[in-house]
Image (cartoon, rainbow, N blue to C red; front, side, top):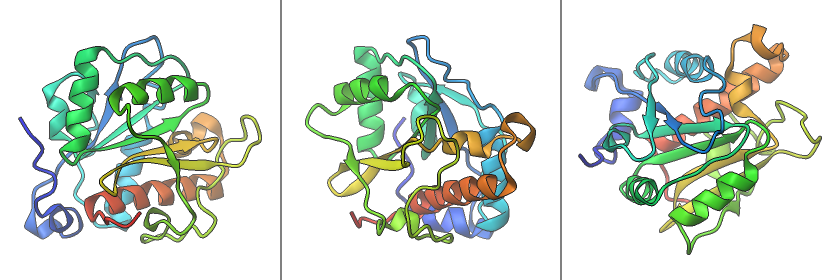
Length: 220
C-alpha cells in the first residue's frame, strides 16, 4: 500500500463536509525505549485540533510499527520516548519510503533519546542532516503564532527549546522538538501538573504541526 496523503489532504482536513475521518498514529520501535510514553497525548491533541481547526481526525490513535506497511495509512506519525531507539535494515527502508512518499514524522524527545534518534535517522537518510528551523518558518505561524519558536514545556537541562527538521526536496518531512517536550504538554493535566498556560501552548503548537502537514507548504 502506498500513501494517499498528497491528494486533496487540505480539503479533507479542514473541511470535514468533504471527507471522512482519518487517523494519525504513534510509532512503535525497538531498542528498549518507551515508545508508549504519554498515552493521553495524541488523543488530547486530536480533540483540541478537531475543535480549533475543525479537523476530522479519529480519536482512536493506534501504534504502528516502523517496518509495517500499515505505516502508509497515516499522514502524520508521532514518535517519543526517553531512551534507546533501534531501526533494522528493513525498518530503515520502510520509514524512508514512507517519508519520501509524503508521510510526516514528528519526533518529541521526552528526555534522553536525542543521541539515539539522530543515530537512527542517519541510517534512514545518510545524506541528509537535521537542520534547525528559524523562527520565521511557517510551522510556527499557522492558526497560532509562535514568534519565538517552540514553547518551553519542561525544563530538563534548562536549555532553550529547539526545533529541527529533515527536508526532502524542500519539503519538511521530519519535525523534531528538543528540550521542549511537546508530548508531555499534551498529556492530561493531572499527569505532569503543568500549568494551564504551558498545556495550552503545547496544544496550540501541536495543532500548528497538524495544520502545516495537512495544508503543507514547500517553504523552507
